[in-house]
Length: 445
Ligand code: FAD
Image (cartoon, rainbow, N blue to C red; front, side, top):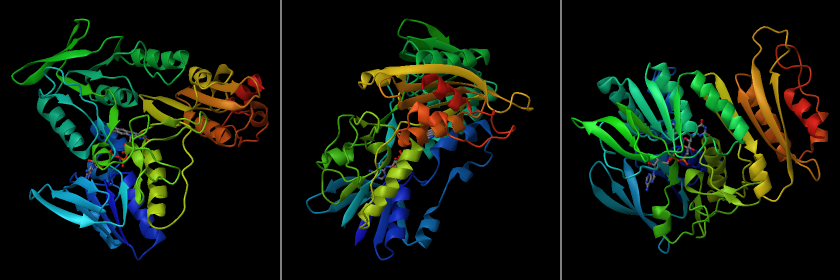
């Protein structure tokens, strides 16, 4: 059987590797339109800041390593059409500008997502960047070297914008975040988002809310200022557009594959699309929110890997399921970690729950132990039955630990009174005698 994978970064690479592990006899081919494949986009901000010295270290596996596993990789090859009736692909060799056809038995679409780039005047000026692909990373680094920017504007205060605020600040570039919404981090409760907002201001990042990008001004072909919708002019010799991404679905859509209500490819729990024998995984497809039961689109690397694994297994003849997501995510800006799992109070309310929340600030280890750090967490539960619905945590402390405990509790559908009596690991360097999440749960039980 021949399995073809379209796209070879996170979901595609994982799918191909899993398919190979399930059955050594299948022919597996992966097409990737970029020159690089199987890299961690998540590591890019740290390559730019220099925390990661060698950009090649974010490449997880090379085509040669895949070849050793019996997976053929064709980089700089773009699949331009899927003929689902004939089970055939049209593939363009981007190096030689030639086109060939190839048949498949099973197909995995892992075409990912692409940055949203507004078509405003000046968008093509030098110094206007996005960050998504490996070539974006190269362009980012070259631009920093060539322009030696002093003032940056990041358009969009989502997690990539906030990560990059730290990156640019660490390079000595004065940074302004321009955000069209009235607050940053809309998935968080407003008071938790405000903590991050205040923290960024303390770290000399300017934030302009409720205003959008109107146009980019330039001189000598280089960007010189951002003009906002309300007429503000912000001088900038570097502009990063980070207003979000959209799923790459054109190929699938043209083949007659059904999209879901989020605009990404619709899949079932086996990652199967609406056309038999064709699977999808990663940022190009939607999934189910386990708490609301509704389709959701959450373009994140861990989800792409989890889904890729399931798609690969099923394409190779297995029967794996991906049950959906809780919406767990984390990032860091300066020394502040910001994380969420499950539903915010508003999202819980919108989903028909009767939410109640508690917020508290605590040390992340014994108060007398050197190096203790602080974190603030909000726990949200369903007032009717005490079931935990969500957790948000912000601070320099061990936020990741709190969020992963909460995510596990959500998976187990625990109530706050069940969580309150969990005997988590304790010794002074690791935790207060009662973990902050236990204390928060006790306040809700
Ligand atoms: P992609 O990474 O988009 O890969 C799809 C590949 O397929 C692309 O190379 C694309 O060019 C190629 N392709 C598309 N169409 C075709 C075609 N027709 N033929 C051939 N090839 C094609 N996620 C986290 O969970 N945590 C993080 O900390 C985090 N940080 C991030 C930081 C940055 C700066 C960025 C950009 C992303 C970050 N992410 C993070 C998101 C994560 O990188 C993505 O969710 C993940 O890369 C998705 O993987 P994917 O394989 O589905 O899609």
